[in-house]
Image (cartoon, rainbow, N blue to C red; front, side, top):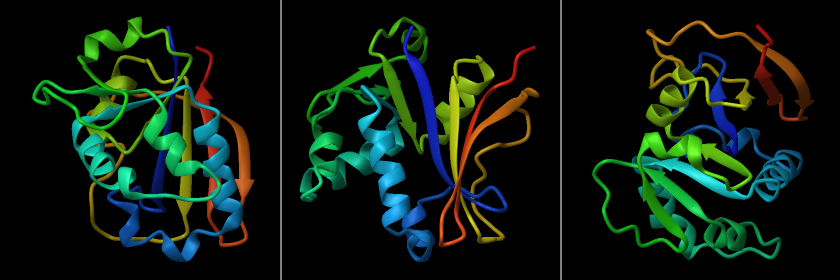
Length: 176
């Protein structure tokens, strides 16, 4: 089975909606390198339909000298959806949630995709949880961890502190 790494932008109060609305002041070269290394350390992306549609509408138009956009556009993408039929973004394939345990792609990076992340957590399929915590309280918005998720313990395996006040926290499921 593939290794599943969930990566999320979150606020102090757990909001993880579209980060373009609030993360800008906390993004700098340090954070960019952290995200760059994360993307280039993955073999494929695993996305929910809504995140996929947002990414597919935006990423094909981006270009950068570092190659981040080329990596986003070129790597394999698995979209967990029961409604999407014909994905148009390069190297994209629609799968069901039941197909995830059988994927043999190496490291799968899951960004956004709240509904998918919660389902993966419920099924104990998440191998690593990477949170880019922003020093901001939104006071409203969707939360990554909604009521009803089963209790799960994680151990902190890496902490990156950025000069903007953001923190990169990497967790793995704690041993039972």
